[in-house]
Length: 378
Figure 1 (cartoon, rainbow, N blue to C red):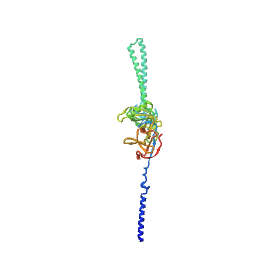
Figure 2 (spheres, one colour):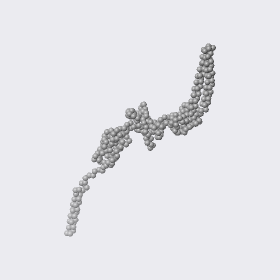
Figure 3 (cartoon, one colour):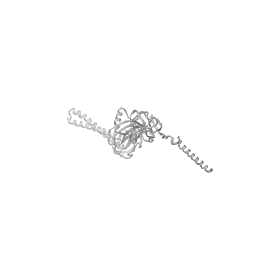
Figure 4 (cartoon, rainbow, N blue to C red):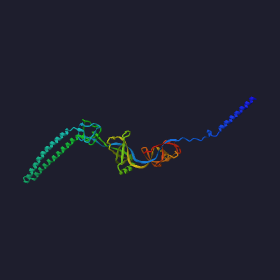
């Protein structure tokens, strides 16, 4: 009987444990009845849309050109006997660069002067003879034809003297050409014909090329669609231009627009412009490629947003705008142009709006964000 009682007690204990387990499984307030957790906020950077004055500019790649360039050539035949400069030197206007052998021309000058003296003596004799024959004519001792012959001789001698003076002047001019001077202040290039060589007057090859770099030009091209704006703003006043050499670390050089070509390039659809730069520090050098910025005007109170906020979609450009409840919405915008890190908004945004600038890939309309504000551009 005692064993039977033990079995009954064990069965009762098992039933009690099962009832307790069922009570715990269906007790209200367990995890199965807990509310669903919200997704975490997406971390992003935001910036405020502002209004400010923004310059209207045209950007182009230009090429530096010398203000003046002169290819020096000999104007007389002869041998180069001296070179008075070194390649690459800065030469001043009027400085002697080359000297050609003067001796043949000095000999020609002496010969021309001797001829002039001889012809002067012949003229003096002819003039005295004319005076005597004039007196004889007045006394009717000779015929008018005889006097005319003497007068003609005197006038011929006078003409010969004038020809001698011109010959002397010509030889002196050739002597001057034996000394070749720089017509401008600039930098000399490579010497093409060295000392000791013979040169010919107006030969095809130049002796040296001198470039003036103070001031200097930069030529560049802009789309022909911009020509009307360039001419319109130039009519209001001088247009400012800046040029800088890429990766040089040198600040941009200020200048002014000085030339608009009289025709567009039909092959490229562009028009050539030229700007003049004082270039006192010689930061720009002929042949360099430079980044050119032509400022047309200042746009007042333009609506500006960081360009990193602009996204491209199938329906055009858009931004994610931040709502007061810290969720985002998608808004289509129209961008007029970009200027540096800023985008000028034509429509779709107003000053004071907040837009997402970093983290757009994880966003969709209605997504909650954790915003890190970015200071607005001044």
